[in-house]
Amino acid sequence: MSGPNGDPHISIDDGIIDDGEDEFEEEEFEAINSALDQINSYLDDIEDRNDSLNGKLHELLESNREARQEFKAQQLQTPEEQLCPAEGDESSSKEDLDKED
Image 1 (cartoon, rainbow, N blue to C red):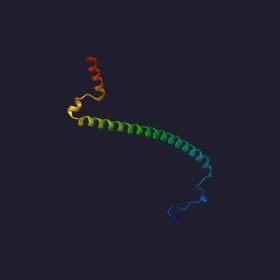
Image 2 (cartoon, one colour):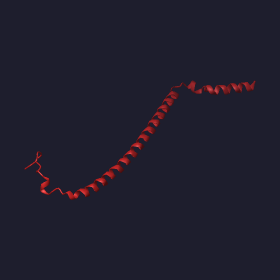
Image 3 (tube, rainbow, N blue to C red):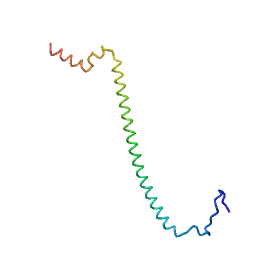
Image 4 (cartoon, rainbow, N blue to C red):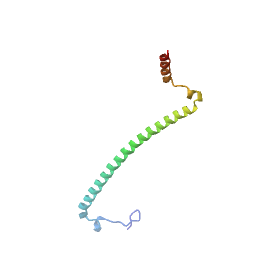
C-alpha cells in the first residue's frame, strides 16, 4: 500500500530500520556539528571583515566627496580671486610693510 505521496509504506517491522546504526549516526552528527561550528566561525570572521571594509569605504567616499566639492569650489572662483592672497597671507604682507618702515 502507498503512502499519501505515492511512496510505499515502510514500517519499523519490515526490518529496514536498524537500531545498530544509531551510534554511527551520532558520530556523524557530531562531525557535522563540528564542521558547521567551524563554518559559522569563518562566516563570523568574514562578516567582521566585511563590516570593517564597509566602514572604511564609507570614509573614503566621504573624503572623495569633500575633495570634489573643494575642487569644484576652486574651479568656480574667478581668476581675480585665484590671484589674491589668502587671508592668512595678508598678515604676513602687513608684517613685510612694517619692516620696510
